[in-house]
Image 1 (tube, protein in one colour):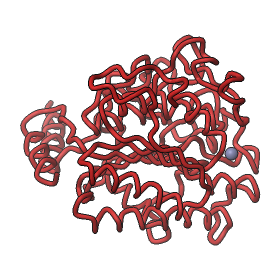
Image 2: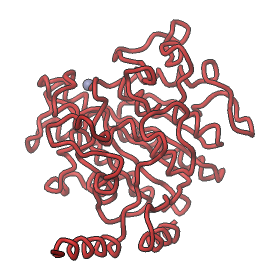
Image 3: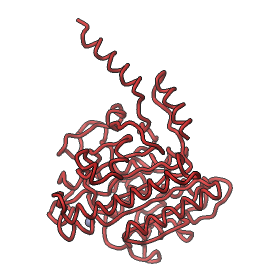
Image 4: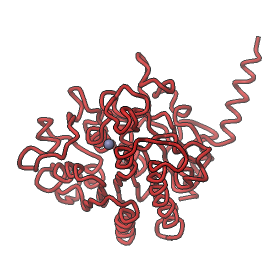
Length: 369
Ligand SMILES: [Zn+2]
């Protein structure tokens, strides 16, 4: 894989946009209620796992859904690549535990038509799929994409209707990691692709108990530290397993931030709630780069306290995540998705050579009369 990435970088010096390297495995990590301040360089020593992710393409000015900053609607976006509202939206606006499947607790029953997901595409193309959830409400996806509710496999060979091979509900990051690793190792042993969605709830639990307090030693900071320890362990496992090393890409983001009001995140107009990190790790440490700079033609970076810029291209949202993950697996976007629907988001970082040559060009044009 290192050779593939190197080849891509070589190619980039001559032309753009760059093709993505593809990976056998992708892990989507949604850290519930993660404030982007936890990824800032001054906290690198406190959070080395998050810091390592921030060495790749990333932004700390990602956005959640423009109209809602609560957990379940934003996770529906993270799974379907759609915003919550509008005719093409996934339409799930409640945050309570869903009713049972037979009582309408599926995305398709709520929407009035099938809402495809990242699990559909991965499964139908033969990948192993897993959802490791930290809140029971995410059973919505097990109910929506299990054998009883999901659509038939649309890509030969027929892998059955059940789009989720594994569904685990567990609140502890350390034991959740065991489930994540089990999926990666099982797929690796069968030479199969895999897509794992890992939802880590602990920062949100702590935020609701004592607030999104970013001061040194706060209980919220300690909850994020626990997440970071699991991320460090994940990196350790990936670094030391020859079947996985260089073959796993990670996309980490959040459903929302938190702190407005103090022990919640219900106000979708509050910057504390709508600002989230969005980070991609391409199987190996790479130079840090800004996703907005790489995507100036299709994404507009809002000001720090701005939800989005009116009359401009959208910001980078958590809804972009599932089609990024599929692109990293070499798979097509989700049918009916609206965010990153053409997989237009550029993820591969420019090489140092191409950056310096661009800078030289702009400097020389600036000095023209
Ligand atoms: Zn919450």
